[in-house]
Image (cartoon, rainbow, N blue to C red; front, top):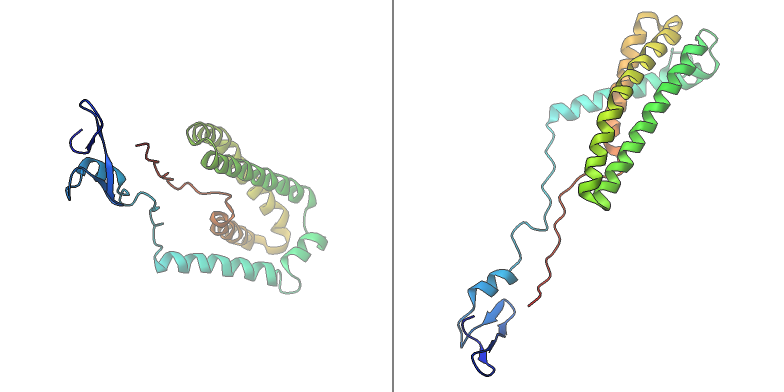
Length: 199
């Protein structure tokens, strides 16, 4: 070490002369120690999320507006929820099986979101590996369940809307996909911890 106060035979103690670093002698600053005490640039800041273009925002708004229109107006006599509960034209067994498939997909989504949240909060390396493995294994099941549920819903609701059933269900699906990012339990953001000085 260079500079400092002598404490006997060949030993030195560093003295602090300013809050920004340690002084070696007089007004000189020990640059090595000063570099360690300075905060790293951008260490505590998180990267900004990507900005969405106005076309993306307009598309999201149109999906949500079309879903709200479908849910509110239904078949121009009753809203969509009332039709699902009370209309005798609906074929009930495919409707219930489709609801079970959607429920399974929702459970898969909630489970993987909780895994992602715990990976971020507790043990990031082990949690991320577990989340990746679980996501890869359940993804094909979720896709197949979603496609089968879509077909079952189409078959169940066909007597009411006939060929309009397909765009109606697709609009509801896309509105759900717009809403999903706001329902996640946690997002992955880089976390930087302040390093404590030991000297």
